[in-house]
Image (cartoon, rainbow, N blue to C red; front, top):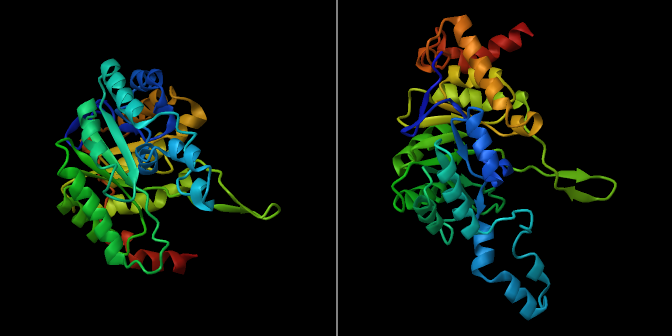
Length: 328
């Protein structure tokens, strides 16, 4: 069974991509990902705060001012867990490109189009085959309008696209009031792909210590439904690639996303839980399912259960919701 895929014009040997995570901190891991069938690897993110911290000479300022103002320690988030500076990050891309043949996708995580945007060009020069923009912006300021939030996203996309020639993917969040319209506008701004969806950090409370907990839980398969819905709704209605992420724990979720219309499927939590060699298992199970169903390649069934192709398109709309409630 052929499982070759195409993503933003990049030809992949398999549809499963390793999403941005700390597993790609080490080049040996990236080699192992290729050996076990990863179609591509999205590098761990380079953060806007990280770059600003370096540009400001944070450590030097901190030592010279001796924390003279109370906000000194809080101005930048703690980034000690990210053991690479921006220059090291670029060198890591170069080394990865020297050792593997699969596409390497750089990842930028930020909220503005200042400062870190120039690093998209540097990533391209380092050899990245594409860039994924992870716009981690929660509009907590109640004075910011939805139009301003949308403009910020579109402005960043346009700025990056005017900076580089390689493909640019946007990791989209599910909180826009009209995801479909925003997807089309992002396409108009130059995005080559949409990644559905960005899994924002959501805090929890420690009720005994009265503290905000900073732990992070891996996604589970129950979280697949929202990105599955929008992948199925957007398939055939945009001219850009669709990547699905969140909740991918096995080949089952990979198959569901492909049936919805995804070009590729991204995962990281399944590799943390089961190890990098689990990629080979997922690819095999995908091929086994294709053989059982009589599908020769991904094109034979991609989008087969999207809204565009199902016999009853209302299955994705309010009519089906009412039917479910009536049958409960």
